[in-house]
Amino acid sequence: MQHYHIAVLPGDGIGQEVITESVQTLEVLAQLHGGFRLDTHEFDWGSDYYLREGAMMPADGPTILKQSGFDGILLGPVGDPRVPDHITLWGLLLPIRQQFDQYVNLRPIRLLPGVRSPLANKGLADIDMICVRENTEGEYAGVGGRVHQGTNDEVAIQSTVFTRSGTVRIIRYAFQYAREHGRRKVTSATKSNSLQYNMVFWDEVFAQVAADYPEIPHEQQLIDSLAARFVSRPESLDVIVCSNLFGDILSDLGAALAGSMGLAPSANLNPERRYPSLFQAIHGSAPDIAGKGIANPIASIWSAQLMLDFFGEHEAATLLMRAIEDVLTARQALTPDLGGTATTHQLGDGIRTQLRTLA
Ligand code: ATP
Ligand code: MG
Image 1: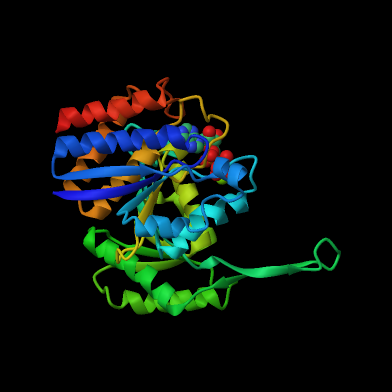
Image 2: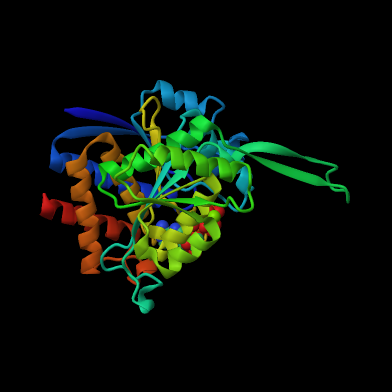
């Protein structure tokens, strides 16, 4: 029997509330399914830790995660009104992403049954895409600087870094994903009319990699008009591959189209499995509802589902997705963001009850 070691980092705000539901759901699934076991180890890293210790995690945090032999990491949202955003991001998530070479950020954008898209009144409700975002370089490489700070001569420069190996591997991953999952098309988000070095380079690599996948239709579109197409013709999109910044923006747009920030999952993958991959809801720590027990746990539970799928536990992953869809379709026990009155725990329980029914 497979035995998975999972590191659990609940993070900030609603993190503990939603991650608890993910862990409980995984445990029920493991019992019902019987084909795998998992154990979890929780770490209290995040903004409270920062306010206590002066860092978001111990200096050797990634080493601890690596040496403990974890197969996967479940991370809650990280962010706190008392801590500047760049500290929370650069103190925890980005070092883990980079040191674990999680170069694929996979974000399903799918309108689940029973969920109302803001586009519904236009008759557009057929949304099923997957955003493959480059996750280790590009606009978020952290290269740049500021001079003459605070004076009228101040200059701030933020450079982008696009390497050939980094660009090839993310685009190849997107085509490979399309091939393995029977997807119909790969769209590359670009901006080569105004960014004449990095984006023109990206376009060249895209064309070269596409040549290895002749059976998969592909296209390139400028990010601005692609964003408009997300809203006007989302049904025409399938796999989207893009740089770090563009993917960040497009996937929040996609999450909103798919009905609620509380539904959108993501996976930060090291596809070669040299390092543990990380699974995380897209939403933030939602300070406005933290502690009230009303956060939607589905984004977090769906992220755990992506982890099972990545582990190769396809049967269990399919079962869990089915239970999530059934609960949404039944429209019972939904949290306020979905128009219901249920608590976080009641929605989690609803999914676990449905799992028991299906199993
Ligand atoms: P951060 O800086 O941590 O990203 P933010 O305020 O920018 O925080 P979110 O935390 O994602 O962004 O919150 C945006 C809005 O979506 C808030 O009104 C929040 O309450 C809501 N929201 C986010 N996640 C959920 C969830 N899981 N369930 C219900 N509502 C949510
Ligand atoms: Mg935010």
